Structure formats: C-alpha cells, structure tokens
Image 1 (cartoon, helix red, strand yellow):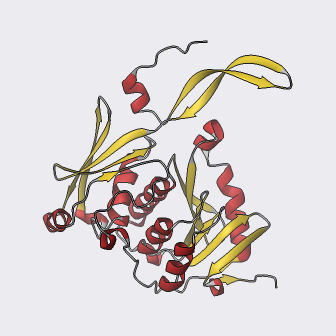
Image 2: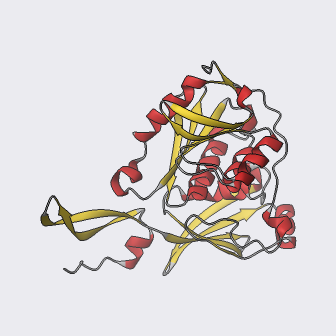
Length: 283
C-alpha cells in the first residue's frame, strides 16, 4: 500500500493530515483513511534574532507566540510584544516577534538556544538558573467549588476538536468558577497548548493581569514543573491535570501558593497542594 504524496508546504501549514492505513479488527482487514496530528518546526524570532525552535501544531500561532513570550519571561506585559508576523518557510514556520527594545536587550543577555521536542522538559536551557525559574508567590484569593472541576472536565471533551480527529494532541482549557469552559487550545505538546492558552487569555483580558480573572486551568496531560511554572507565572491560582504531577511540580506549587490537582476525573481527583482553595469537598 502506498500513500499519495502530499505537498510539503500544505503539511507544514496544517494542524493535521490524512494517511491511508490498513486496519485489523475482529479478524478482518480493511483499507481506510486515518487522521494524523502534524508536528511542525516553529521558530520564534525576536527582533530578527532566532531564539527557539519548537515542534508544535500549526494552529493558533499568534496565541502561541504571545503565550510563550509571557511564560518564558521574554516580555512582562502583552503591550511589549508589538507585532507578530507568521512566515511559512520550506522547512517550517517562522514567528517574527517585534518586542520592546528594553526586553530585547535583556533577552540577549540571557539568550539560549532551544531544541524543541514533543513533550520536552526544560528545552536546553544553558544553565540551572535559566532552567529553574521559580514563579513568584501568588496573592490571589480566588476559590472554586469542587463541582466546577467535574463540570470543566466534562465540558472540555466536546471542545477538543483535534484530539477527536487524531487522538494525538493535548489540550489546555480555561475554566470559569462555575465550571464553564471559556477557552481551549490544543497542540501535540502539552507546554505548547498551555502557552497558546495563556496567549489567548492575555488577548482576551485586554491588558489586565490574569490574576484578576477568577478561573483555573485544566490540562489533559501530567503536571510537570513547567506546567506549574507557566500557570503560576501567568497569575492563575489552580492547575487541574488529568494525570499525575511530578514531585518537583508539587513542591513548587506548594511554595508559590498554587492549588495543584492531579488524576482528575469527573467523579474523583487528588489534591496535592493548597486544597483550601476548593470549596464544599465531601470528607
């Protein structure tokens, strides 16, 4: 069986593609088409200087550029990212970001080369200080009903369009205090999905700090250090993961005041830090 060739630029610029496959089921073999999530090299370029290359899903790229810039501390405020230009190249996509001169000067001082990988960890930081950027202590007093976690988990499923088609993507969702899902972003990488969500939230907030918003994050992945770091640095006070947290993630969440929830399902979850933020939990 051979697959028809697909134009290279079409694959690079698309979040998914199709492939002819042989399916074996119940003792029978049949030919069908399968949907595949695409991984595209995405280069983030600041004021003409390449900073990072990530393998990501070619969708919501302006959200990705803004969210990455904020969560990595490249800019402190969305207003410091003046423009984003998306350019399709022969071997990937370039995101040309024009940032404030002061932030660019600081970026050059701590510049590093990243080699992005799906599900990457610390992405090639040059030293331990760069790698372990601990978030500041959260000062928000937002609290959430226990039922809002279950409602959010149920609601996010219908909005995971790429996951439904491919089975290969993660999602990060912003959930309101009543459990309604306000925004969802998807990507082959869990960190990328969260960066996209943070960028989308920053645009939605219109320049207001995200700590003023009374909502929380659900991720369909495990809760690693970086997921905690990005959530807390954005000023959001609760991260709910459908899988397990790491030990470092739990310690950092405890230290910075983040409520960290793992193994979340519609009828159960495990609270690892600052459970007082969740109201009306049956004991």
